[in-house]
Image (cartoon, rainbow, N blue to C red; front, side, top):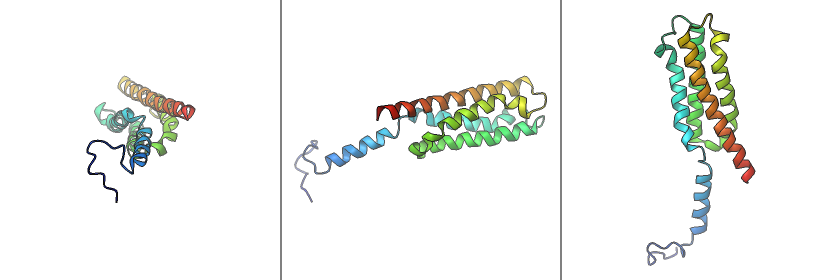
Length: 146
């Protein structure tokens, strides 16, 4: 083993410096949408509980199930972006598509949606679509750089 204890604070002579730099570069490269992890997770969790927050769980059970399933799916995408970002980047477009479905789902799923249902789904759907487009844009930009 190399004796590197004599050079405190200076890593230039460390035998593993190139490997450490490569590992650090790989780690930082994989975390370019780190600011989206939390908001995507929170948007998904809110969308899952929104039928009870906006009080339409009993008046529109079909939309309640729709929001619960899609909210949990978005929350799982947020967790996936945190734990395995490289694998989840390909699902960014799916997040945008789910966001569009969230926007139109009150009219497709519910019978006679009220204003609360509509505003809830349109706002959270637009945010989800925006998050998906931002992440997809970063993926596309990253692909052009390499």
